[in-house]
Length: 414
Image (cartoon, rainbow, N blue to C red; front, side, top):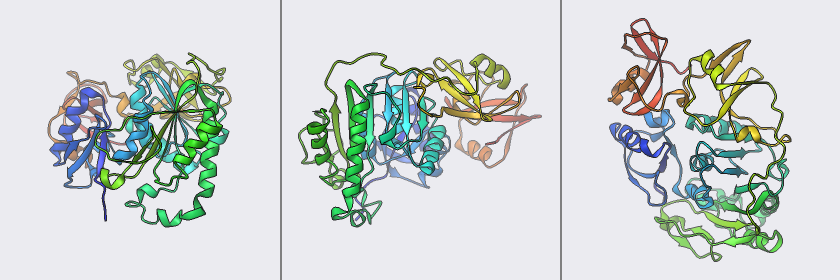
């Protein structure tokens, strides 16, 4: 029997919540807030698939089980902090980490599988997580300095027993001793993460299984063999929890109308040290200042914190300050914003981050979702004014740019 409810989260700033909810309401969606997270919602009416909504089209919502939201919330990074996400794809937890650390922070999201890494990058780009850098390593081999990361999320590969509603064969596929290889991998990843964790830092270990050998036994391994200390976690409202180790959380999936999930917070003893960094890399390619980028593209990014752009291999990437300080040994990728050809920079103007945060007298502000649907279907709207590009909004919510052609304007996702 299906015992979960359909949940999602808003992907927006606090002052945009009302407009995102209004956009959803205008298409007939109804939902209730979840007490565990200010941006979490549970659907009560879905007139069409939520993934086809305008809010989803422009990256303002992300469909995610509410239990899956808990690990980044339990890790609780501070604004401006650096976080290492060991096993990041598809990016559901990475996106929350990106929101929590804010524009001045950095999330380094690692994913060893090429296909899953591609999915992670697509999702981060769609959601506008420009403070996320990505890399592709086996977690045990991440070339990072020991004692250097104040926050680490290890959402480990697991048997998935807590997701049987979505994956009915998970318990059978990983029954009995079949989980032994997963348990060995989890211990390897925990060992590596413990080494990278800074003194005084927090490691959040999580799985979507209810298997004690992958959960509580791994916490015992970490505290007995890795010199980590268990930090008690407070229960999240809106959930029921099953018995587990003191301070750990085991989500009762049936009682919570959600997936089963396990969470444990581990701390490395010692004093926090600031600015423990390896020598930063000499970046390949050509650095482009934001002033030069703006002059060549007509797109303004002055509202972002300190940043520049990197042109390499025919592509151009946004580089936030903290990403540019990643160590030399690490091969990583910044936030892709377009292509370059010769001296030209061909930025992707469909990225929401290029749209000014608030409309002005030169913008088009739309109040009806029917008009937005018409634009997305290829219809044009009348417009008189100079320029080739027009920022458009739903109420105060940035959506993208329209292309001006004569006395008409139209949407293009190219």
